Image (cartoon, rainbow, N blue to C red; front, side, top):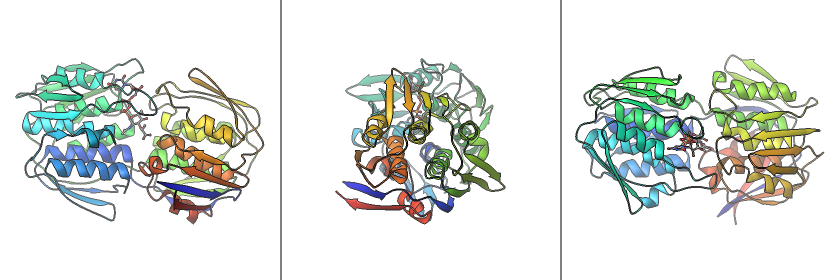
Length: 421
Ligand code: EPZ
């Protein structure tokens, strides 16, 4: 296993370019299975999760060529209908192949993803949506066995106990493109990545409208038969993570290639805290030098404050004077970074879905353990600000979702290196 060794206390400065969005790349690679033509995808980040998805689609029959963040992918015919457990357990987003496999071959056998560090991660809404389109689903021996000779359009509501579902919205949308008739998804997720997938599908010849609102209409089509070149959106969570890096080290960094409309709730929080964020024509200037104030964060589905930025802000708020709170409303167990931040000197109390953070003057470097993707980013951010040396272990969690993270940080002046345990 690998770890990061970080010597903290340096103010970051310079410019960083944001990569393509992980949570767009994964469903869009799966969606390319819907056509037998070649698709060229630009701005695809080189991440472990992307490599896992490519391993999966290759096993299904895709021919791929992935260089310089450009992915050529073509699936002339399917040679498998299965997403096996050893792939799905590594990456739950493998279930995005469900819809395309059913659309193209009338059947799919996909392992249940199981839970992960941040929560049980059920897929009941995915199953509800696919069943509404006429898919016969049997869950047996840890696998979803799905079959449908004729997908038919229908009205599907995806309101779940925690609001709506990004994954279920995308999965139903993928299957609905091949259904006979029109599908109306209500209580749909509005995340920018959902919009990106819908826009990509329209490039392939689908007829989708309402993406970005809570009601998405998909007019089913004969198989999508257009190949296309498509550039995916930048990663708003990577952009937010680097903005926190500038703020937590009291540095001054320019973040380019990001879409600021996707970051409104995060920028509002920086303003509340007193971090200067200046909008520029191609991104953001973050100046973390000024006095900062404690604040309260209420995580919510888009366009609210994103759960994927919660851990990073917990690190930042931990060294801001005063008492801040974070209420995590989406996942049941997404405060695991808290105990590791406390090993670095943070003063955090967890009360159910709320973290109460009493700001301390400084982090002290320590050995800490990553537990999930965004928690590992939070620990790196704390290490950058800490006095002394921090070692973040099990950084395979971080490699799932950040491209060249330590390389980008070093270019901003951070003293961080990767080494084997
Ligand atoms: C996507 O996960 C993202 N992952 C997550 O990012 C992100 O945190 C999440 O959306 C919320 O924005 C990808 O896009 C690959 P959900 P997803 O379905 O689709 C419950 C990261 O760090 N739910 O919107 O799995 C679920 O348990 C990752 O990049 C059901 O109850 O999230 C959760 O509490 C982490 N039944 C809530 O809904 C279902 O069938 C939101 O989940 C599905 C979900």
